[in-house]
Length: 183
Image (cartoon, rainbow, N blue to C red; front, side, top):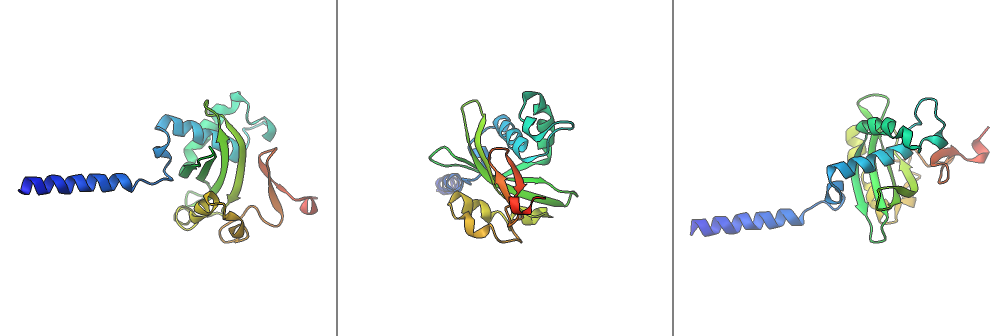
């Protein structure tokens, strides 16, 4: 009898652990090698250009090793693929010190060769302690996935960009100053 009760208990635990899978875990979508490909591609959009390279040229294949190396400083905190094929991301990115980080969230489409298209960076958090970026600001990802993000974009304690002076240029794939603030 104890054997049957133990089997039922273990079976119940196994089933319940399967049902609590985090729908925002990138590992639920991709294996580690594919995750690295995706993260490196995201970093190409988010990070600075390689030395002696203009931002517009950062997507050339010859710069892939630079972004692959830089991606070690980044991590995908949340990831979701919507029914329409839109990929949503929330990544942890480096700050000026090892204790300060920044979060960045947005979305893109991706082809079968893992090439990103229609990339949008929707928000960037201020520099914060890593725990705050991971916990306190993570709700922004949920709001973005649910198309409710706009009302939070003016919260300066959670969002540094966009702000009254900046916008995300979806052609150059970088944050820019609005004309009235540019010199």
